[in-house]
Image (cartoon, rainbow, N blue to C red; front, side, top):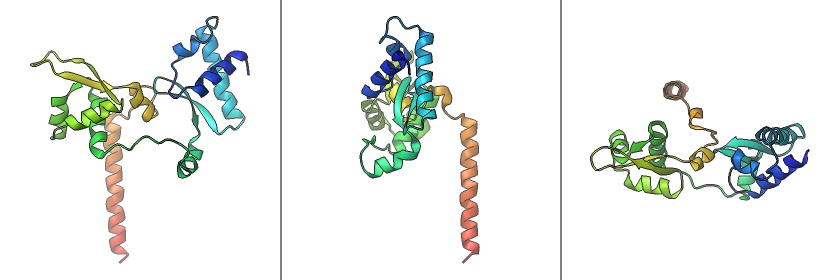
Amino acid sequence: MNSLAKLLEAALFASPRPLPTEELAALDAEASPAAVQSALDELREHYDVDGHAVELVDAGGGWQILTRPEYTEAIERAQLAVRPRRLSPAALETLAIIAYRQPIGRAEVEEIRGVDVGGVLKSLHERGLIDVLGRSEGLGRPLLYGTTNAFLEQFALRHLEELPRTDELAIALRARATETVESLVADGEGK
């Protein structure tokens, strides 16, 4: 492994958050963007080819060294990893609305959900999953919300374009509902 790849590995290992390529490039002023990308590719290949238990992942707007998925369950069982608190169904629903419709105001989210979302918005903001992107030009100039890099990181996305398309979600939900109904019918016939 070349010295730039080793330097990037050290920085990524020391960082608790994904590091954007621009921040990594700042570690060596003489390295070109192409050299930094090449070093990242070399590091990723090193972890993949040599069978390491960690991998280099491009997520949350930057690069991060993470445990491979096949070891996650054992590490969580041993309570070695700090796991983020789970999101409630209301928080997940609100977050999905914001992710797909951003920038979006509180009133629009409440109209879609049919309930008050003030507490949920506050919780999502405190967790760093959403942020205020600006103000609407509408009456009262309400705040507009959008997702953050922490949102991308938590859901292992590089960018919002990796979110499932809404038509894909509808098909997946229909398929799951059909499987559930078929399972219930099969259980009823077996009795």
